[in-house]
Image (cartoon, rainbow over all chains, first blue to last red; front, side, top):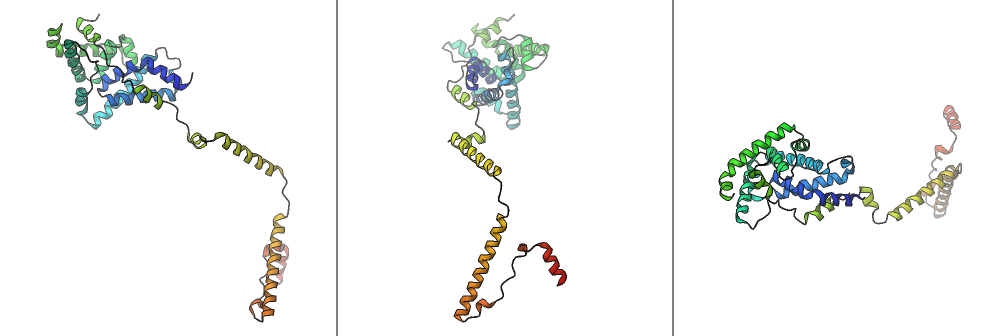
Length: 170
Length: 125
């Protein structure tokens, strides 16, 4: 299989998951695109990276996470206020016709943006990638207990933050 | 076990990847040709043919035995033509009555004499 076909196949299979994950960490669409492009270029230049990998999705999420965190650090050094601005600029959820869902999605996106990127990454992988703590630990290169505790902290913060809206719409 | 709150969050659909990204990202991920591929790109066969022709020329040149003394012959030929020119100039000067061509001709280049005879001359002088 040629490199181009291989990259295209990987893109079709994993781009959506990688996009949502990286966008949730970075909250900035152009930066997300840069990370995805860099990731696929890396895979195309080193096709052996994925040889023998049992879980390509997990592996790609790991690469994407590392690149996204690098970018977060560079960005923090560059502009400390940009993340807050980005949180307002890029939402991670699809538009909805349901007004309740729309309000909840907007509030959740904002609340997620207030979490530290480490916690946000764990929440994303648990809720939207449906990974176990062990898989999250492998992906983020942290102990499973750390993954579990980060998730609990994050969910508690989100629940607290969204309680008024959630109580209203549930 | 996820709570209702977590389930509610899970049910929210994520945004899709912008459609135009695929073409851009896949194109960017294409392997870039190296500098020598770019250089050869317009007519790689023609360049390869030229390289082969040069290779053959070099091989033939290396395989053909060189003619010994060719350089020496060339040098002596040029000295002969210089001497001939000198005589011609002198003759013209005599005919025209000027003194221009009467200067003593320069000594022949040292390289044309064997080193041994030069040493003998120096010792005598």
